[in-house]
Length: 276
Image 1 (cartoon, rainbow, N blue to C red):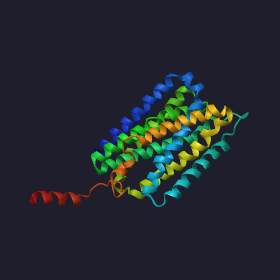
Image 2: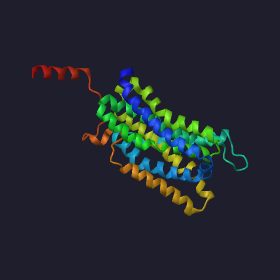
Image 3: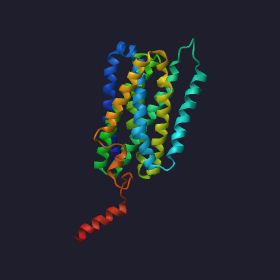
Image 4: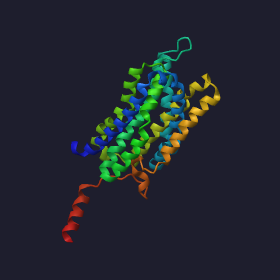
């Protein structure tokens, strides 16, 4: 099994490294990031919502006929988790509790973990499709560390703790997804991948349109909407980037994820070579 996950794990670690670089940059500017945490949170909301609608949901609906069910499941799971956290850790004097950051951070961690699963599946198909998927997913994952850090700072988490929690949620979960999914990557079909995408999208949409939009009530509309627009613009640029991610789905006319060839197919190909 180790040999089969070396390539996806290598690229998963590259993605984690890129995310960590972004984290280091914002963490070094602690005071500045703290002052602008609400604006970063709104930009993250615009970015996550746009990426969900332009990238994740279309992928989910493309691969899975039950995607709408899983999309709703992800959304209401986020709602349930967020309100459960609020019930356990109620606000004091109108100040949001640090534990309320759990829901958005959990959503980012789930999405990043699923990206690791996609790495395993695509590299199991072929090295080329894995590389294309890895480059595209790394490009989309790069801002996740910054977003996670901004969310944690928004809820009053200290600079050092925010750095490590954001690292665990946005960076470490991608190679973890590769390792966990390694033994099962040959059994994951399009339906399973689409369902995972839908759950991820539902969680992200709830987080982006709910907790992350809360600062809009606390600032001037022009300032808040400008931050959201910046996030939307960044997401559109990422979505339009000429790199195929999400399992390389767009490169196949039949709309199927590239799946690994069986041992019988390999034997047949060798037989053709001998005959020629």
